[in-house]
Image (tube, rainbow, N blue to C red; front, side, top):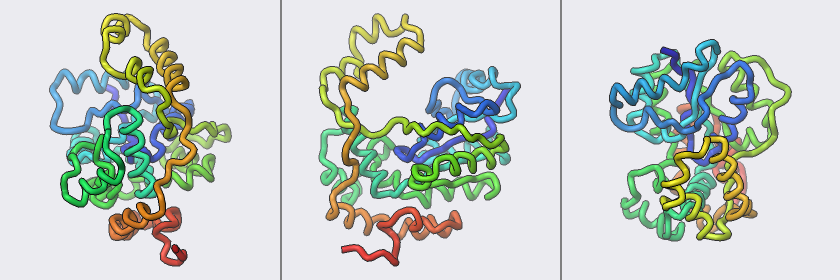
Length: 294
C-alpha cells in the first residue's frame, strides 16, 4: 500500500489551490487527480474508506514524494491526530497562511458566491461576537482565521523540521523563491519554470441561474453527469465559471470592518508568531506595530 508522505493542510482561501498546482507540475512529486480528499477530517474512517483513500496513491508508488492537499485538515480538530496515527511522525506538513482579515472576508465571499450564505459579512461578524458562529469550516469565517490553536495541534505531534509555514503574501510577490522553498523542504529538485498562474481566485457571481444549473443538484447532473468522463466535467466547470463569474476587482473589506477584525485577531497573530518562530506582521501590515494606521 502506497501512502502520502506530505500534506498541504490549509488554510482555506489562502492559496492552497495554487500551491497544489505548483507541486503537481514538479515531475518528482505525485498527487492524486483530485484536490481535497478530506480523508483525515472528522472521526476514524471505515476500512473501505481507508482502502479507497490509499488506493489513490498506488499510481505514485514509484515516486519518492507523494502528497495531497485538503485545506480542512488545519481547521478540523481531529485531523492532526489522525494524520500522525495513520501516516506517522515523519509526514511533512505544509501550511500556507494569509492575513486573517483578508482570509475571513474572502472566505465569506467564496461561500456567498456559491449560494451557501445569504447574510451580510456584518451579520456573520455579529454571529461570531454572540458565539453563534456555525462550527463548520464552510461558515467559520472568523474561527478559521485564528491560526494559533489550529497550528498548535500539529506542533504538539510533529517535529518542527517536518512542518513548513509559508505566507500567501510572500508567495504572490516571490513566487518562484517560495515554491522552491517548498520543493527544498520536501527534497524535490529546484524548478526554474514555476507557473505564475493564480488558481481559484475570488470572483463575483454574474448570473445566478447558470451557477445553480452547473453547481446545484438537478435532473441534468443526476441523469447525465454520471456518464461524463472527468476531463469533460472539468471542461464544463471551467466554461461555466467563465460564464457566471468575473474576477473580483476588490476582495478586501472596508477600513472600519478591518479595524474590528484587527481587534479580534491581534492577540492570535502574536501567539501564532511565537509558535512558528516567524513574525507574521512582516507580511501582514495591519498587525505591524511600527506601521501608523489612521
